[in-house]
Length: 127
Image 1 (cartoon, rainbow, N blue to C red):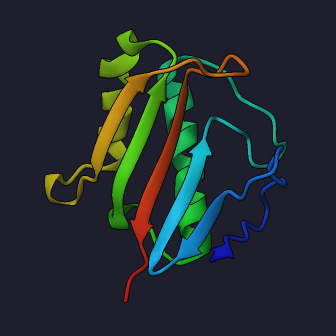
Image 2 (image 1 turned 60 degrees about the vertical axis):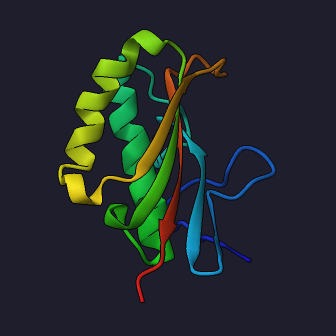
């Protein structure tokens, strides 16, 4: 097991890694709408937060040597399940090709820091 080093990102605020590489996969921790430059949450509507969250996942995957096209599974946690349709609008922009869409679960959850969405992911390493 090897933690993913994310240059230019602040250290996680807690005892976890942004991602871990193990046996040909990258396991990305639950991420949210954190500004990588400041380490602070950028709160807004669900579309804004979902986009920043997925960009943060993309950043971790790239640091690990893979990308969004190699995600096999995402777990999405919404503060309000009524944001499901708006989340899907953003999600589809990051996964536009049906043949490359990962498996996914979406649930309503209690989230801290007033965030509206948290997403974790599992991706294959190419090769």
